[in-house]
Image (cartoon, rainbow, N blue to C red; front, side, top):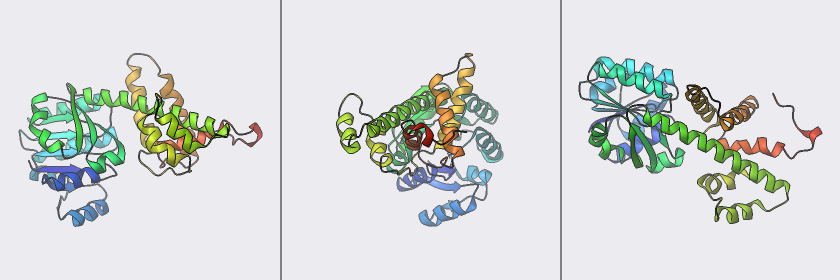
Length: 296
């Protein structure tokens, strides 16, 4: 199936490479021309002049963009050239209502839409082992599953359009809680004078073990916060979770606390670091009161 990718950031570019290796990639497009040119030359693949041109060349269009307005803007740009029966799959993390609006737009021209946010970070995107949570028609998902297997190790149909984004919201709340727990616990261990490498090893082998501790613990205690998943992006996702929780007229305490902490990190210039940079904030808990920086 001829597949195009729109959005060649940290996730999109890696997904495109895996689709190319599997023989599915037909075209790419990115708002920043430099990224398109670089990947196009690397893969020897067609660089579409615009989203409509990519739509004309492809049966399946995969989106990997950052924000709700970007998704809707790209959908509008694709529509003039999308053929009836083609499929648009969005791997971005956006509000459930945005996914439903995109599906409604495309339904008017007989194009199917699936919301399919992913989890697994840059590592998962590079290795083709992402977890994909999909909302939309199960039969449509079945048609493109052989293509998606090039980028995801687990593809789970969650229900109608919007169910994928709802599941991703749950994932992002859990990720925030794990980040809070691991960074706070390791800062506590550091304050207690424990050898952090041994703490990570022994705690990680027991009931408290988790992916984040195993993959981010060793780097965070070395003061290395290279992106995997940027603070600013998780902040954006948690703001979406807050909006979605608002329909129930409730606040999610964990989300609210993490948003505050991320705002502090972003104000201090750490928004482009991995979310494990929350360790910086937690270390501050154990500094003498007079040495603590004033928090914005």
